[in-house]
Image (cartoon, rainbow, N blue to C red):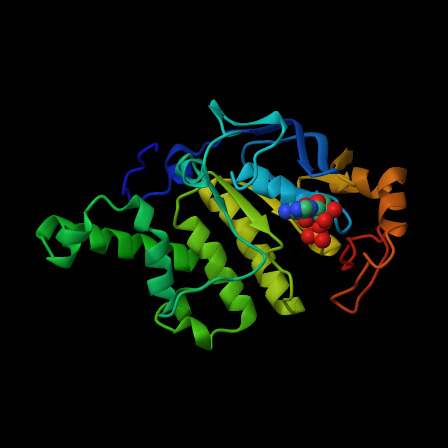
Length: 292
Ligand SMILES: Nc1ncnc2c1ncn2[C@@H]1O[C@H](COP(=O)(O)OP(=O)(O)OP(=O)(O)O)[C@@H](O)[C@H]1O
């Protein structure tokens, strides 16, 4: 495993650079089903890139490949100079790729406790030194706590730092999940449906947080999201999957105009659901609130 330091500064912020993610010809089969069929796309350094598509298009499978949970039958995933394709999830995380999940899994305790757990992999002081409160371990603990406070501030959780997570709203809990991923000091953040289940105010707040993370930390973001309004407003570039194939890619405007994208969305019975009550079609100016 590549060792990462316990530095209190984010890798991306200090260098101001991250790397491109290159996905090429990735194919995943489950028994007879081809979940991904020769999928390729590039996430440019420092960009917000959305991966969209109707239900069953292969978005989660793609995230599972990128984070090492699923091994492709064919194809490669490269992050800068590093080949991620056959690495275990913890090694991919150590290379600066962090992921959130659709379903929130929290431990008990406060927001601070949960974020400190997220720093565990970056800690250099051993368990015994920490338990015995040896001076170097105490110093490191303070530095970690300071960094965790900064991350809480970046994710608008600073006012909730000492609040038990079970008392948080759903939207705040989702943001704790996001903050916990940031605790790994990623250079690429994979967000799996970051606003699913949120109300309009929570969605707007999370969108602002993601934008500000990119600006302040210089990291790249790849997000899977059904909320088309959010995708259209937030993403620099969009890749569209359908039945495991990449059917389109480009700016939000370009994919919105693409006939194959429109066919895939409009033809997906039951896949179109509006979580906002403000349904618009894919052509609506300013983006739609439609979840697809
Ligand atoms: N572990 C698995 N075993 C068998 N089939 C699977 C498995 N995981 C996914 N699939 C199938 O692969 C296809 C792609 O699924 P995937 O979950 O990646 O799509 P998705 O775009 O994320 O869908 P959704 O938007 O509903 O989450 C689907 O047909 C799904 O049923």
